[in-house]
Length: 107
Image (cartoon, rainbow, N blue to C red):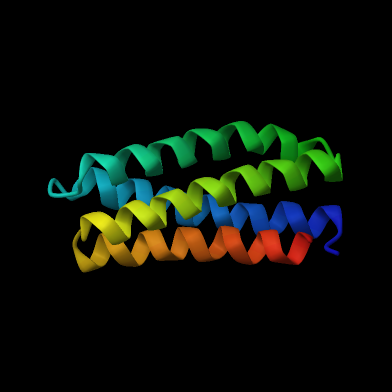
């Protein structure tokens, strides 16, 4: 099980990847709206989760990561069905993988 400080540090990495995904989706006009919406929702949720990460309440932190990981699963599913550009596909997979890896380290 990761310590609180490690969870917070890993979450910063997740936020960076989510921010990159959001930038890619904004700059690529051909991104399907379903993917754009998924990434926007993940970015919003990551913003809300930021305050949870500062709380040092491990159970709340784990729940926030679990929620984000489920959203990452949905983004990857939508990505598979809509077939966006390779750059968009790559960044969606990175978001999913970061969230999935962190979740698995917490459980």
